[in-house]
Length: 417
Picture 1 (cartoon, rainbow, N blue to C red):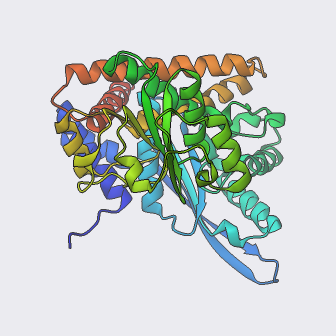
Picture 2 (cartoon, rainbow, N blue to C red; picture 1 turned 90 degrees about the horizontal axis):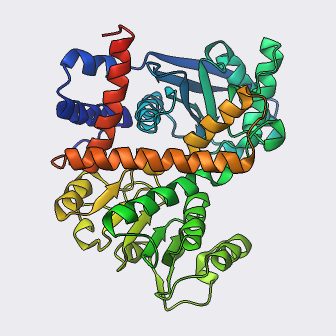
């Protein structure tokens, strides 16, 4: 069995593939491959049982050619430095692709937050951010939530940071509670961004969104909001699923009702107006115009890629297609909006929140949503036009090449290379 690449090795391999499209030198590739800084912190903490336990955390600051580092912080028992380094590189490309004034950053603590009490979780969060306080700031590195972190964790970060620097810098993190100058729109922004990319792709590939059929794997925050907006814009969402299974109705699902059922019962399977119940695997192979995998990574592989019937795939999740599936679907003519574009609504709204913090709370929620729509739409159009010029390059590589080209241009102008 071939050795599976770790996340950082995978990120570097993708970088080299995109760099070959751009004709970049080995020296430039080496500069782009290595993060500018990786901070490791030790977090000794007294647990509720009186014993002291040591946790390890990291923050990878990958590239600042285009601006301050930006990216989430995750709490997970499987977090590694390699994973954090890879994610920070991918954030650099995502921010560059969306033309945000940021470089990429990512953080993580190796911990199972489900095993912590609320007091322990707060203590861990405060100590982690205190250890990072010299390396973050509104003009330097602006973290946000990620896996198993949320607005409450961001609120603890903000408070700890303010206590340390003795200055009211609420903009040091984004996706905060709205009463602490976050934006309510941040909650819906990733799903909304996925919907905008699907809408724009439908205009280019299918002639429009009205009446087009959509299947969505994953009905959490991203999938449910994508479904909500797409149905409001005239598409027919015919199939959705969560971890327990899926439902199909070719006449179209009542998405508001499916959301209610999911919220109250925990499973979309309890929605009754269906023609058929599906497995998650069956949903991926549904006879639809647009497929949105918004659950977990690696669900479309070399095995099921030949059976995918959708003409457009919009990646709501991170990495739902394997490299082999990418190649198969590209050769079959399936249009793919890759994750670094499709699910960039979250970081884009974080940018809007950050700008709003610096302006003293000037924007309304409606202003924020209009700006998000405009930013996602413009990014899609530039990506699509780039793909038209480089029709020999698969969509994921094209997206990364476009992003890397922007980063390299900034590095050259700044005299780094």
